[in-house]
Image (tube, rainbow, N blue to C red; front, side, top):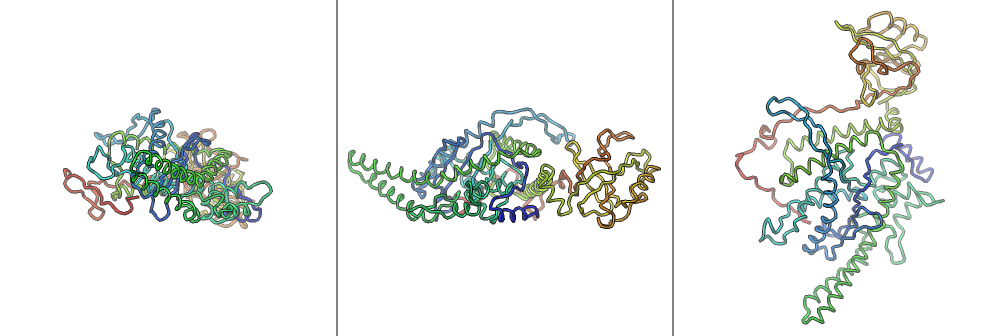
Length: 564
C-alpha cells in the first residue's frame, strides 16, 4: 500500500467518509456492461443456486436452481445462462474494423505488418466482488469439457449444446481477469477500492454494501456507521437487510428460509411423481409450481440488493473521467476477445486444464509486464498516483531554470542539451541514472548528471555552452550526488533522445526555461522478454519434447474440481 493510500485511509477514519485516491477512472467501462450477481449453495462446492443477470438496470433476468443437487436442473440453469450471455457476446463479435498487426513471415522470418480484423468493441462482464470472479472461472472450468448429446449420444446427463461454448467464454473472461489492467471481467469492489480509500480493511471492502456506505453514505450519517449497519442490520425475522454480494449466502438465510423451501419443493416433486390420476397430478403440479415460486422469490430477495449496489457503484465510477491510457488497455482487451472469437470459429479445442511449460511462462511474463505497464500508466494519467511515486523517490517534478545546448563527442555530433531543474522532491538518483518524461505520449529519456550549486548556475551555463560535452563530462558548477540541503534541489539532466535526426533539436523536443516538467525513474513502456522455445523444442525438464506427432492427445483426467 502506498503512502498516499495509507494517509487517505487515516483521513477516512477521521472524517467518516471514503477519500479519493485517484482523480481519473483507471478502468474502461462499457456503455452496456453485462452484470452478473450469482449465488451458490452452502455445502456444495460451486453448486449454483441462482443469479440475476442482464444489461438493463430495471429488468434483470432471474435464473434459479430450485434443487441445486439435481444435475438436470443445474444444466437447465446453465443453458438459461448461456441464452443470456452468448447473444450478448455475439453482438460484439460481428462488428469489426480493419487493423494492422505484426507477424513473422514464414519465408523470410522477418516481422511484417498485415491487415486483420479487430472487433470494434468487446463485451464486459461485471460481478460484485472478487469471489464472483473466481466463481466465473469455476463455472467455465466445469462447463467447457461437458459432452453434449450430439457428441456422445449414450453419455449420462448430456449437457445442452450451448453449455460447453459458454464454458469456453467464461474461462477466457476468467483468465483475462488475471491480467493487470484488463477490463473484460471486473470485480466492482476491487475497482471502487482502487479509486476510493475507506476506513476499513481491504477484506471488509469486499462487502459491496459496506464499501458503498463509506463512499456515498446517507445524508448526515458517518460512513463507518453506515457500513456497520450495511453489514449487520437484520429485520424482525433475523435476516440481513443488505446480504453480502455473494456468491456465498448468509447461514441464517440458508437455515431458516432456503432449506425449508427446498424441502417443500422436494416433497411436492415426489408427490407429483407418485400421482395416480390426472386430477391428482394437476393438484401436485400446482403445489410444485408454488414451491418453486417460493424459492425464486427467496433468491431474488437475496440477490436484488447486490444487483442495485452494482449499478450504484457503476454510477459513482462514471462520475470520474476516464484515464488517458485506459483506452489503450481496452484495445488490448479487444485483441484478446477477437483472438478467442477466431479460435472458437476455427473449431479449436477448449482451453486445457493445465498449460504446458511455454504457455505458462508466457502467461506469467505477460502478467508481470502488464503490471509494470499499468503502474506506470496510472502514474502518468493521475497526478494523485504520481504524488505517491514522488513520495517514495521514484519521480520528481520541478521548474526548468536553465537550458544549455551541448553535443555528443562522435563523428556526427548529436544534441545533448543540459537541463537544470529546481525541485522540492528527493528522487533516488545516482550518476547517469536514466529518467523519463512523457513527450507527446512517448517517453523521452534523460541522464542524471549531478546537482548544481545554487550560486553556480551561471557558471554551469557559461562553461557548458562554450564547447563539446561528452557523456561522462561534468560541467563546472555541477557537483556530486549530495542532498537538497547541500545543493538547493537543483538537478542537472542531459536529454538523450526524441529530438529528431538533425543537428538542432526539433521544436518542442527540449524543455524551455520556465517549463514545469515531471520526470520518472521508472520506464513508461515495458520491454519484451526473451523468446521462449517452441513446444517442439521444450526440454524434457519442462514436459517436452512431445511424443509421436501422429498420436491422438489424451484428455486430462477428471478431478473433483471439474465437477460442480
